Length: 229
Image (cartoon, rainbow, N blue to C red; front, side, top):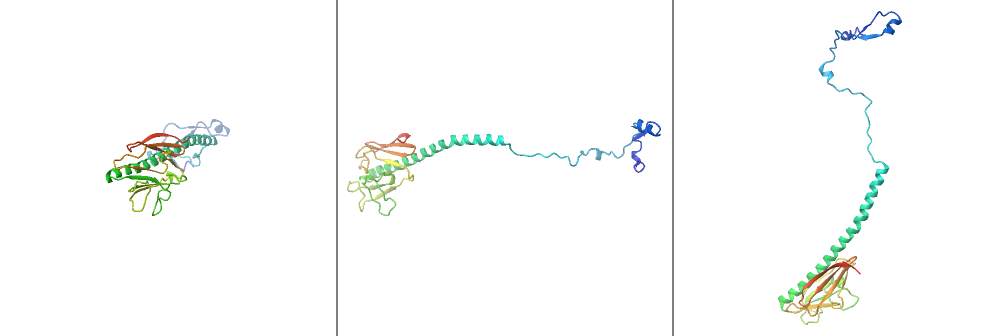
């Protein structure tokens, strides 16, 4: 075999005569002088050593303990976030409803001053029809809707021929709007913008509530927010 690779000669040379067991006992020692290895070219020595079949496999995943910890943290975060989110949403719905009714009252006051006539706001349970009307039924709530109109005969009721200025309908089905005994059915503004009687509205979308005060001069003010009773 060494004869077939001339350049490999001299790698090992016997340390003594190869006679019987002496050769095995004494063995071979490397020849350190005159060692020539022309096959170790720079191209070969610069290549990395690759051992086939020994590549290490890495497995990715989570343990059962890690999964339980993650689920526990997620449950705690959801438990804390859901009530806060519901409170914020209820607060925004009450604010939107309050602004909607406040805008209707402001429109009635400005139109009364501009037209020099009485303008009224009444509750209605048929605002979606082509010919809506005011309602004096105690079972009907402001929550179902309201009408803003020019009240020519000053009776706080929309009659034939009177101009309908605005139709309002709260979007929230679970909302309640209470006239607090003063505005049970309607209210009206004089040509000077004054209201015939001062009062307030209580608007509630559980669990949030706001109060809309209307003073004698016809101006509207929101009296903060609190929890529904």
